Image (tube, rainbow, N blue to C red; front, side, top):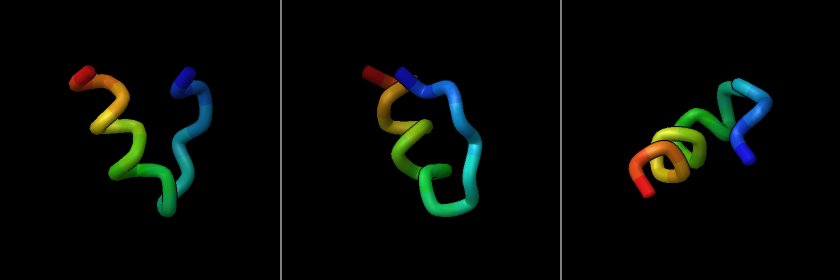
Length: 19
């Protein structure tokens, strides 16, 4: 689900990758 790498979704992407 993490396809974009924006500066605001940086933390979200890390959390999603951790799950």
